[in-house]
Image 1: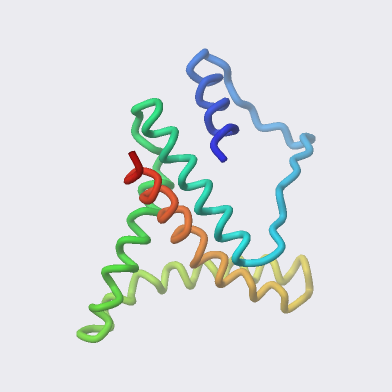
Image 2: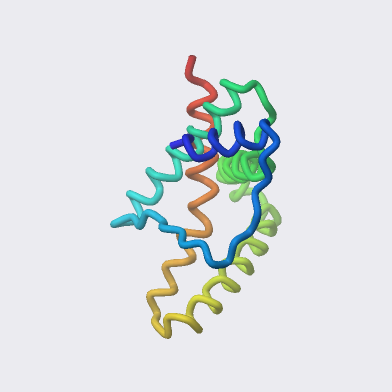
Length: 138
């Protein structure tokens, strides 16, 4: 789950440049369920941690954001009883999810687009968890 990240890293270290090619066909793995998707994201986060440990390099920004999002969410749980102000950052995530929903709804014309909400909220949590779990392994 980190082979594509690793090959890109090695190629860029050798001086190769990556270009955008709109004609390129890219195949994405489609998961059967949310549980499968979340497991996949945990493995991707773990792959990013393996890269960090193997190459002893600073992870990319999205890794930091995912880990921060996870830690913030975990810290938020007990604080919910004292103040609702801690929920404020989640309004930004909700706005992002709504924008993705509206765009997806235009394309699919189906209410299946509502599934975007658990994906947008859960994706960085699972990725962050995979990263932390792998970093803690020896």
